Image (cartoon, rainbow, N blue to C red; front, side, top):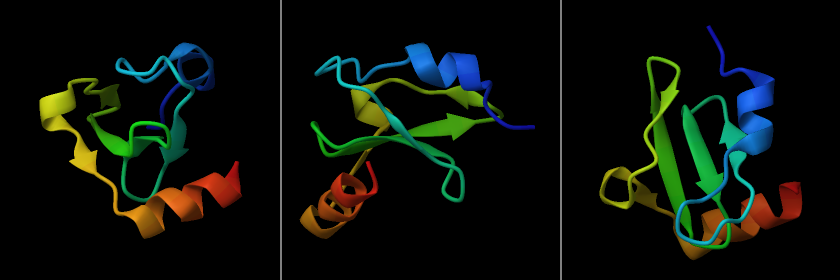
Length: 67
């Protein structure tokens, strides 16, 4: 099962309030602005900073180009 597209439209980064990008392959919601990737577990986004993965500068640049 995938994340509901309507949910993806309204979710934002809890730190910056910026939109999130969905990485279906890694099951993460990516915030370019905060350089964090929030996990999605069993189709539920875990929007906690302490659970997020820090993105490398290369990953941030790759996601910036995808927007």
